[in-house]
Figure 1 (cartoon, rainbow, N blue to C red):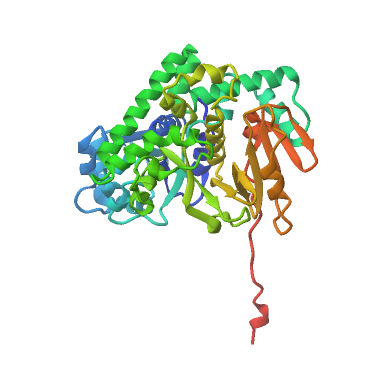
Figure 2 (figure 1 turned 60 degrees about the vertical axis):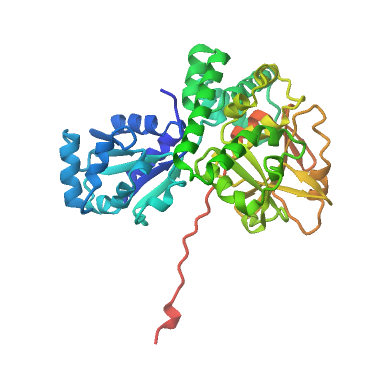
Length: 452
């Protein structure tokens, strides 16, 4: 069974004092159902599963009156297995197929007998179908494809190696040549295989790239079927066109998504819902340009200027249909591979809980990513070539007098090196790039002075 960081999240959720239902959202095939099944069987005495996609009768549990007592009668009759209060987890799988079940979560949580996890791959897309959201009774958690560190675990890289890499990162010391070479090869492999659990498992079992690509093409075909099933009739063609255009758009020099490349008469407002659909389905990752690279970045977003990445780098490689896998595995990233490398880094940054932004201006040039960490911003450049110490846009932006930045990082082929304010990191060191520690925000106003 593949190890996932999300398992620790589930353990924390189980131990929480005032537990809500956990709603796990993610693109199809990211491993939501498998993970919850494993968790339920290992951490609970009783585990029951309802799948609203494969069993239409399951939805009948939530038809009629949505009182906790009536739902419990229906639920226990349907499951027909022992469910002990306080020791039972119920998985409501593919809950987007039963909007009434999403509405009923409020009553089930209030009842308190059992724990509930909802999983779904189109929840953002089908939000209008839910009659009443269980606000205050549901905790949202996003599950992304496996990140690079999880990929290392799957390939039996030992914890001591990961600890050594983190130590080098913290001390800004170069990684040994042998480890550096091996880690680069593992990173190339991750770019090709990606993080879809089924694909990763196929690679781990067979080390056959041909079979992994077959799996990836099957997933892409499933995404296209989802577009046909869930998208509105007016948006189906536009969404499909956008999805198919992502590889070519990223391969363009500035990576920015140019709408008139797929529709010469297209207008942004006519396609907005289609872009949103792909993002809400977890299939694509939008990265917005900012007017200036200073926090809060979301207030500086320019929604008409954006890049659109695939949510999984392996799927992007498969979608390119140009046999790019061989070049990547041999480390040849300088010839038209910068887009795939950049997509891989976007996927990693997003999975760590950061929002994706970039900065591009005629005066300063383009920066690949601007990442907000707390109330500070990091400037990140992703270099695929050997001339990674040339970064004019980074230098110009960092020199602006009224702009303050926390770190200026260049991810590259080279080893760890601090050169003035610029920190050079090998690509694989993205596994060490993390959210800052949470600051204690407890605050209480002393109102004793209001006494009369």
